[in-house]
Amino acid sequence: RVVSKIRSLSRKTEDFKLALLSSQVSSAVQNSLAGGSDPFAKVKGLIEKMIQRLLDDAKAEAGHKAYCDKEMAETEAKKMEHEEDLDHLGAKIRSAESSTAKL
Image (cartoon, rainbow, N blue to C red; front, side, top):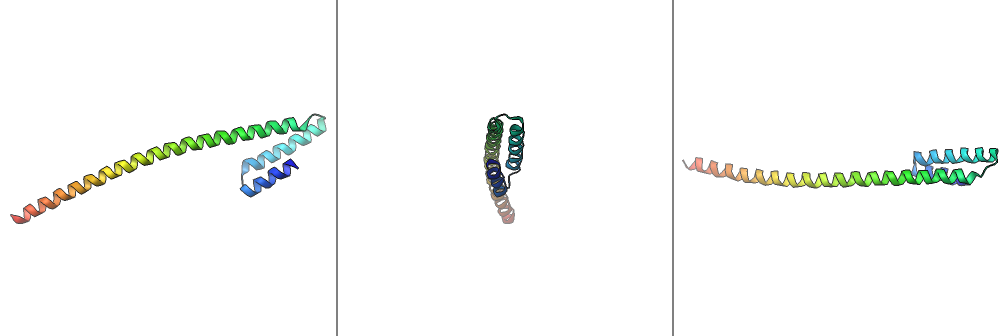
């Protein structure tokens, strides 16, 4: 029942990691039943590992997003500086052209 829920969720979300987890859970349950040990101990461990991997991935993504946001802000600030410089130099060129035209 747990395996079918995980498989269903992996199909809905199209998440390869969940599909892998469902396969591992299925295998663990079958092996535990054949060996006579508690199948849920192994399943619980697999789920905990999966949750930890997902948390680690989320943390890495958050760090990457923060880096990208910082870089984008710096780039936007530099772009605005360059646009201001361009406007200033354009005004100087127009002023020089009008002075030249008067001569």
